[in-house]
Image (cartoon, rainbow, N blue to C red; front, side, top):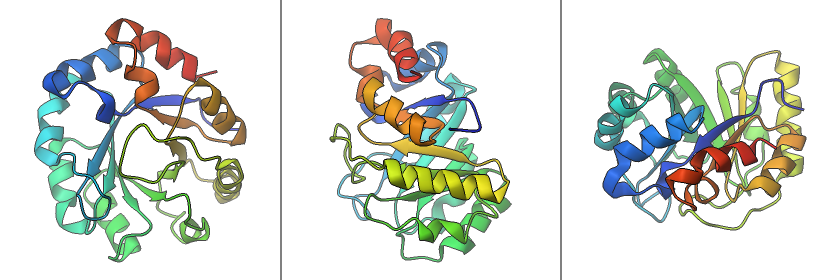
Length: 219
């Protein structure tokens, strides 16, 4: 079971981009602990979203934790931009071509928390050498790149990472992203996850349901 309370991180990829600041305010007021920001470059993943200027624009709309998931490669040249835009946590992918350790250390040196994400097919062994510095480990339960995909059961991987975290003695968020709804959320929490990213499940019913939808994900 998770060592920390379950926290919900709505993915603004599913928000109404025409009123993005207002949407961020709404999910903040609805009880989200983190604001999950999916940055895609059209290169590392087959989609393109937004960059640091958008993060900077929405930063004034919430004091909650900005959880920035960089699905980009390379990462290092843009770390300072995202830190300057207001990121609180910057998560990179284990599969990027550049040196992961050096980049994680650059993120921490810039004054924010760092995380590492693994795709569904990536062995979690790649995480172990970075436990000394990590603040978050993100397990993808879909292939990164597009919202609305079906959930892939990664319970065994989540349990294994939970074991790594517990053995390390460090406080590290164990986040899961992809196909999260009230049913799959329960499955992930039981496996040891303590931060859940959800897009469609939070935003699908409109603003009047954001608080209810967030609460349903807590189990």
